[in-house]
Structures are given as C-alpha cells and as structure tokens.
Length: 193
Image: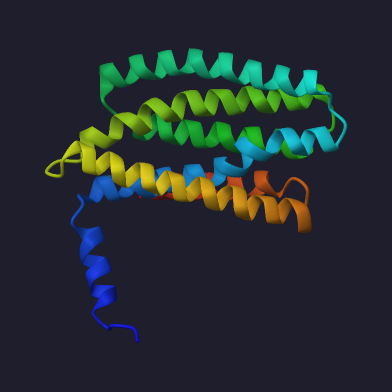
C-alpha cells in the first residue's frame, strides 16, 4: 500500500536543500548521465569500428592533457571571479562539439579532435562543479551537500552506462553521444533560466 504522504515527505526532503544547491545537483546528475556512457563505452565503440588500441589510447591521452591544462585555467578564473555559470555553459558547448565529432568520426583524426573537446569540456566543468557545492550549500553542512551531489552523480553515471549500453547495443552504435548532447542542452537550459 502506498502512503499518500510519502510524496510529501520526499518533496520536503528535497526542499530542505538551498535552491542553488538543488540546481548544481541537477546539473551534476545530467552531466554524469551524459558522460557516463561516453566515459565507459567510447573505447568499445571505436574499437568496434576499427580504430586500434594505440589510436584509442592516444585520444584518451590527449584528452587528459588538455583536461589538465583547462583545469588550471578554469581554477584561476574561478579564484578571480567566483562565477560558475560561464564555465558550465562553456563546458556544455564543448561537450556538444565533442559528441558531434565523435558521432561523425570514422577515423583517427576526427576521433582525436572529439577527444580533445572531451578533455577541454571536462577540464572546464569539474573545477566549476566542485566550486559550486560549498559556495551554494549554506546553511546545509558541506559534507551533506557533497553527499547529495556525489549521490546524484553516481546515479547519473549508472543510468548513463546502463541506458547507453542498451541504446548502443540495440538502437544506434553511437547513441551515447546523442544522449550526451541532450544532457548538455538540459544543463544549458537549467543554468540559463
């Protein structure tokens, strides 16, 4: 038997968190949902279309290097401005560009360009996403705020991999990138309103 008050309890639980913390939690969920499939399934997809392990590894290496460099610049930007909207929108746009490159990629060159955009998007996104949690959590304790956003990310990654794996296997081999584009559009909408 479903208790009619259970929905009210759930709503009250969610409302206890400050509005901006709820917003960053939603953003981090959608980012993880979009990235979950991309992170864990990209190498399998491109191996299946004929890229070598060396090519795939090179793409990940370039992505990591670019991600590290953009993290440094984004961290510096956040220290000076304290503003997270611009980096999150920028990372969403770069992630859309990455997914488009990876959708149309049939060779190493476009794959590496796409992975470069993935690295730049991640490098810009993560400092802003982490910065936003303690910044927006008042009056909630920081540890509760991090527990909330990390739980939403774990759920997003789980769903991204599960649904992405299903879609990749049964619908379209690169559907995880379409899902990522959709999630980045949702993030852009959420942060722009």
